Length: 143
Image (tube, rainbow, N blue to C red; front, side, top):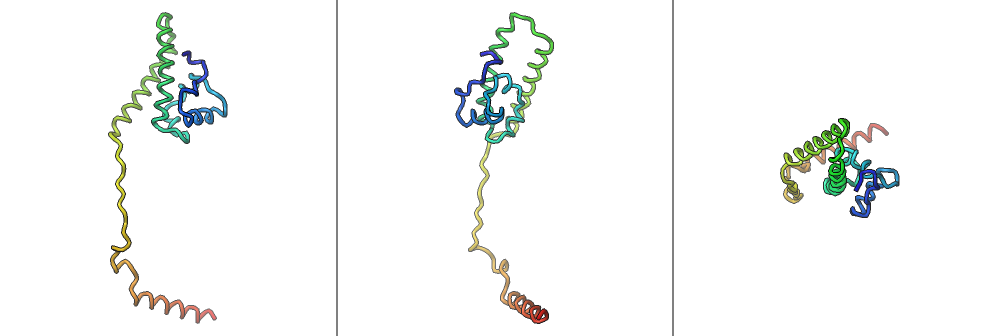
């Protein structure tokens, strides 16, 4: 699958295809265009998460691998070699960052039970009466 062919939108879930088309202003991008967007930029796109990005990268990586296998018979330019090296280094950095985070854990929810509040949390009767008295006296001065 050459990199200049249209990205196979039918090969990805509809929500991922929707993100791709939205990011490319309602047109089907080429595999190369999708491949050239860095992972960190994809992850900031609304609706794009790590699982969706993994689907996209599996397609772009497969296309790149095919292109590399066809290009091995030809001599690659320095610019192409540098571009591939940079992409591989970026992939490696992303993988290292993902691995360093460790397994995902769900945060534990601690429910606050209002029935267990201390009475000291509530204003006492004397405080409520004093505030009401101040409010009444303030109204008397205004009139």
